Length: 241
Image 1 (spheres, rainbow, N blue to C red):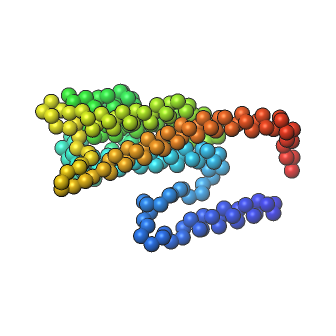
Image 2 (tube, helix red, strand yellow; image 1 turned 45 degrees about the vertical axis):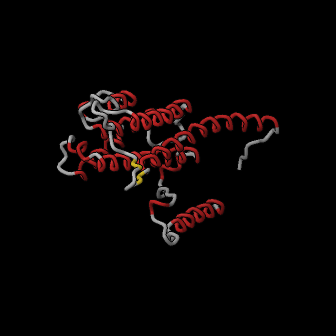
Image 3 (cartoon, one colour; image 1 turned 180 degrees about the vertical axis):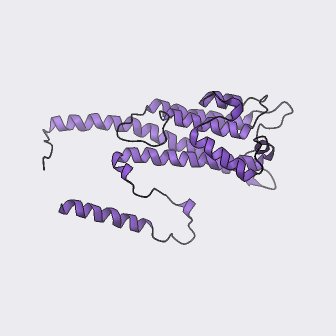
């Protein structure tokens, strides 16, 4: 009981320290963040928490991409029928969380949505379709889930493939053109008057997180086997009290 009380005290102390003031000049969005302690976290391993936080951050990156693309391409959000850009963004965020395609592409999933979004002949909301396609790709690569528990088993190859799909989608977005030579969507900008590479940074963060999780999935499985063999090799008994 004494050890339980000590662990509880440590947990609450850590939570309190997490609420301390930020360093001067820092903001909430510029520092690592996590979630409040909850009962469901006791059904998660450290690795489950890592994957859940990575997924949360991936969906946030997609939401930022959605907003940035809508603001650079206002004709696209107007295709949604929303009365203003804020409403269009909120509708898009909900579609991201659900990995859902725009209404006119209902029934399509992941790379199917992306393929249509990157087709120069597509006349619908290209921003919504593009971002929803990436969200569906990432979520489906994680077995259709956004939170992960001890019973979940993910496939490292699927997550790795999702990272490559994001790379391909970013490259196609930057290189493909409409019939009149204009880009599919305005994104990064390098000119005499302005430089905006924020889109590239978001894509890079998405790819980096997905690659990290794919590598950790392989390492996690390998360590389970190694730990088991070490137990046999050194005859480690399990504690009974």
